[in-house]
Structure formats: structure tokens, C-alpha cells
Image (cartoon, rainbow, N blue to C red; front, side, top):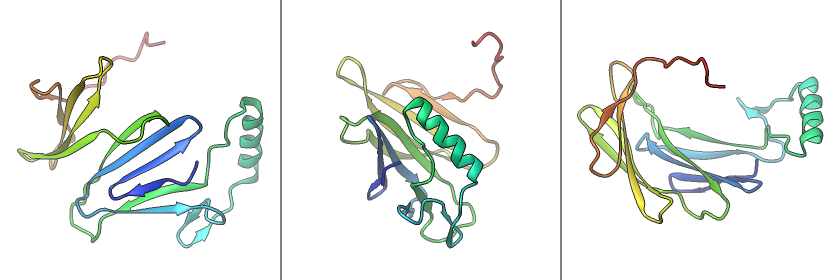
Length: 168
């Protein structure tokens, strides 16, 4: 809800005690633009659109009931390629944390065997780190591979939907 901070290819947004890091990996020539603020809360296509009155009333009622929000409008981040390309691809690493965390995890872009992805170095509960590699198919069918651990083998993403019964 608050104005995000943009530092190069990483945007940081805080709300309450939470912080969201958004690091843009692709496109390589990405341009990040903050849009919002007073008189631009619902800015699109050259104008500030008025939200539906019934929606506003419902959001205000929910905010009063829960003591949080309302969470709409205000600011957004728009990411666009520096110039249009025939096959633009977008890849962002989103990391949720509390506001005591001052920086996003270390990331490194990976290009391998017709795939694009990222290695993310995360802190673990013992004070060490773990590397997570995620690769996405550049062309053809949707899919990719993942490895959790520096020397772990890459494994393909699941290609079937798991049964959803009994989850709750």
C-alpha cells in the first residue's frame, strides 16, 4: 500500500510489519516504473478510474471489522521491456519478509539448455544458506526444473495436478 522504493532492478514495498522484495530478472532490459499516489490510485490508460461505490463501501466495512486495510489502489509497479521483442519473457523473484530484513536474497540469472532461470541464495534456520535453482522452458511446453541445495540434481516440475481432496 505504501509507495515502493525502486533500486535498479529491485523494488521494495512495506505494509504494516511486512516487506515484499521484487527483483526483476527478465527481461534483461526491463524498465521499472512506480505508478500511483494521490490522484493516481487507480491510474490506467491515461486517467484515474473511479472505483465502484459499492466496492468502496464493502472495503470500508471490512476494514472497520478487521482493523486492517483497505488494501486497494495506492501504488503499483509496472515492468516493461526497454524495447518490444518478438518473445518477451518476464521473471521476477518475490521474497516476503518482515520489515527488519533490509535486503533481498542474492540472485543470479541462469541460462542453460534452452531454459532461463535464477539461483536464489536463501538464509536457513541454522544461520547458514541454501541455494535454490529454478529454470523455466524458454520455448515449447510450459515447464521447468528445480534443485534445492548447491549440489542437488535438477528435477522436472510436476506435470499433473495433485488430488485436492482431504487438504482441509
